[in-house]
Image 1 (spheres, helix red, strand yellow):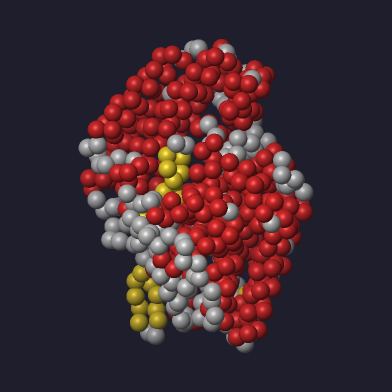
Image 2 (cartoon, helix red, strand yellow):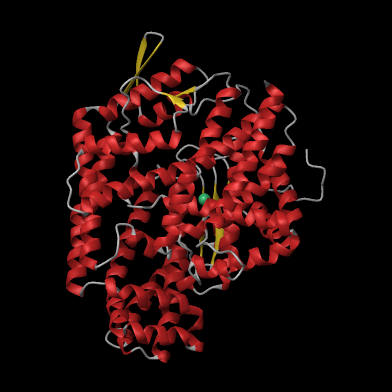
Amino acid sequence: MPQNTNTATNFTTEWKLETYLYTGFDDPQLKSDLEEVQRLTADIEKRFKGILSKGEVKTLVEYFELDGRLSYLTDKIYIYHYLLKSKYNKDTKIQKHYAEVEAKFTDIQNQLAFTSQEFKAIGYERLLELAKDQSLEPHANYLVQTAHNIQYLLSEEAEKVANIKDFAGFSVVNTLRSKFTSAFKFEITIDGKTETKTEEEVRSLRMDPREKVRKAAFESLYKVYNDPQVQTVLGSLYKSVIRNSTGMIKLRGLKGVMSSRNISEEQEDEVVDLLLKVVKDNYSLIHRYLKLKARAVGKDKLNYYDRFAPITQNKKEIPYDYAANLFLETIAGFDQEFADYSRDLLTGGRIDVYPREGKIGGAYANYSKGVPSTVFLNYTGTMNDVTTLAHELGHATHGYFSQDQEHTVYDTGFSLAETASVFNETLFSESFIQTLDNPKDKVAFLEEQISAIFSTIFRQIMYTLFEKQVHQSIFEGKDLDAREFTEIWTKCEAELYGGNLVYPDNYVSPVWAMIPHFFRPFYCYSYAFGNILSFSLYQKYKQQGQAFVDDYKDILRSGGSLPPKDLLAKYDIDITKPEFFEGGLKVLEGMLDQFEESIQEIT
Ligand SMILES: [Zn+2]
């Protein structure tokens, strides 16, 4: 147990939403908030339609004020419904309330859609001038980004057509994909006994301690996804997504296939290309990991189905109070403000800890301008759950520090969103591993950590390289079918693993077809960027100690008030240089060293 007994132990394990959101759907406050939302929407439309475009400072200040109040109320209401829905996912009354709120807010969005065109009419030069005005300074980055992006905005009519086409085409394709694949049945034969399973179930069997089960699970997945008919359908759907994306990119006059995503991430194309290059140049790290893992499980070379093989059979269970206390102790060693806020979360009914019937799976943190952060877990006491706790507390804390920012620049892109979460996780993992005295547990914990990092950094980059290749081909007018997607994928994957896995003869990988993220083009690289950034910051902390903590808090306080490149440059971090990405990967290398040492202890 942790030595320090001064830390809090009166942890709450369920949300007390009534203390910071609403007491229920019949809360008079909820009713009056909903009324105010309607009033504000009408007010904004009445006061600013045809007026905002004049680009006057005073008008914009007033607009941002009303818009800020509206966005606070809609977020608060939406979050309340969302939290309840994830906790009571089978409650039809809650589902209905949620759907109604969603529909209401979509209407509001449409009613206020005119504002984009008004900003376009203000024009590039004037928007940049406004960004420099003192009274609009808190919204500066919003104005600058808008100035850069209005050139890609089509006419109001064309944007409406695009919306209708999205609704009628793109979103149907998305739904169709998920309906089509969720109906799949996976047959798996173990010891002569054949069973039918869902995709979720087969996927988790890939981590089974028995080799034959892992092999059967992979074979079952591949059999379904390699089926010619399945390939034809998923290939056609995917092609339609790519055509939609590349077509809109041409129509909007954007530079390259990734531009649309890079703009929403506020990342320069060159920086993203550099990220892709440096990670690819360091594929040798994953090769080293695969060799070490083979040793840890007593093999010369891993089979392709051994990638998720567990290192140890014994399941160590970590009580929640123990994990929470140890986390508080660790974070207090880092910074008192972090510790105080984490304690607030842990003791103030802001975390929903345990799984229950009807609760959705996974974990998340919710934060928004003006709304207290909340955390959602499904804690069962695994080592992975322990680091997830630290991760989500990191998100929530980032949300708390960014409260200094206005609503227009409160949120960061995905590239910065993982900063505090991964930092927390890395910090906590280091102290958690000290508490493991069984060397096998140590190896297993490190392996879990490293394997997750490889998925986040290396696999996501490989995904992006695949996407880039297929989008580029179609952008240039080539026609690709499922067979060609599979060919390209198999080649990208072979590069990633570099001959460190044993495959069956004539192996082809249909895995591209299993990845729903590809229906949101180029979404994957931001995870890799975020992880590398966190590691770089962690390196700095190790080098500079306490001197770094204030800079780090400033970065979190900045929210989305600057693009990543400019924000980090203020703290001598140059993301346009390969050294930045290479430095981040050094943390991973250190973990691999530690992994190698620990394996020596058990073999
Ligand atoms: Zn996260």
